[in-house]
Length: 171
Image 1 (spheres, rainbow, N blue to C red):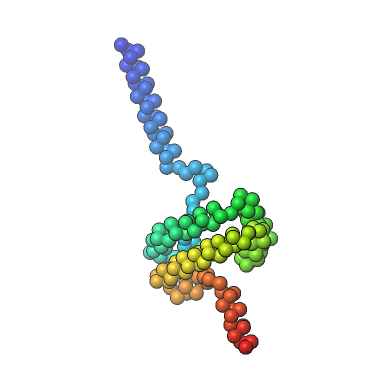
Image 2: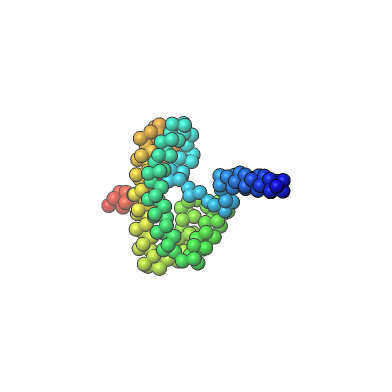
């Protein structure tokens, strides 16, 4: 009878210990698990936001993150494994070399070696990204100060607009 009581107590203690251990591991993230960047991250990373602004930015993230994730998923599905590796290597090399964003983009474009069909799809994807980014910036402008708005990165082909002006001026 005493053996039965000891065994029962031991099993109960073991069950509690396993339960507590399982609860602790639920709260921790896996080491290789990556969190997707927020939709607003690249726009507000250099801004000092108040707590209220951070909450508003989080609401914008919640609104636009699914659309950005869908666009990124479409882009990733379009590329081959070789192209994805080439893109990653080109980005790393450009970053290590201290290249500007435009130089990095050019290096990545050259490394991807897209087919004509992929180029057409990529153009559509970039158009979608620019459209969503524009909506994100407009939403951010509703609660940012004028000084913060000035520091926001420009969205859309700023270079293309400048080229059009030059052509008009030359005429």
